[in-house]
Amino acid sequence: MNLVRTFLLILAATIATPAAAQDDWDLGRDPGRRLTVAAVNFDSFGVAVRCVDDVMSVVVSGLPVERRARIIRHRIGDQPEMTGSWVSAGDGSAAFSIWPAATAAYLSRGGRWVLEVPDGEKIRRISADLPASPSAIGEVFAACGRTLTPTSLVDEPSQEEFGILRWVRMPDVSVPSRGGIEAESGSRAEEAAMAALSCTVTARGALRACRVESEFPEGSGFGRAAVIRAHREGRVGPEDPDSTVSMEGQRVCWVIRFNMEREIPLPTVPSDIPSQPEPGRRPLAWGH
Image (cartoon, rainbow, N blue to C red):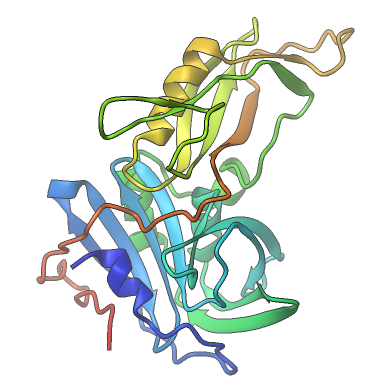
């Protein structure tokens, strides 16, 4: 069964009081689809940290319905409050973090998680107790070629950031078509797509070592296409033309949006998580 489809079947409702605590994050793998997932599931709310084909995602279900991008303020334990950008998916009661690595590092510390989510003209508050999970979430990080450390929250990008740089030439990204024909970013395409990238800048302003921080829809190849174009075409320069500060090694993070007036569809990668849990862990339980 499709992991996210099952995840979305959880009733989308306000949690007026904290949900009953789960002992640990569940961990599952599907090597055939290069999927690793750690999750906590409550009666009407759930959160999963996943690596799908080397791209990380954090998905939350049980939210007020919203069809497009949204801003969610949240706080866990005694950590400072975060304000994050999220993309709605499916029926609108689930949302994906645009900068999932920083979000996952934040959640790995555990504690009372309180979210303030827009609900029409109101703000809905949702709270749940999440166990600390440097191990399970750390394995998701490892599956995506990252390392979860105490400094990951600071080290991982959590927003669009150009620092003292600006675009000299922005890459023109295409949406990969299943029919083999690419739809250019200046055209009207049927698909909606988004990718968040982070790249290292060379002394001459070229972009190198670009990484897909998130991709929507998952498995669409839009993030990979964005990386290729960024490496080939992307150029940045100092915001101040008189600046003498070297660009070498600086990092830029940005989001590429394609036809985002359309709804982001459900991720296309099913799960088929093995029924046997890993030693010492309980099996995944998505529905009730």
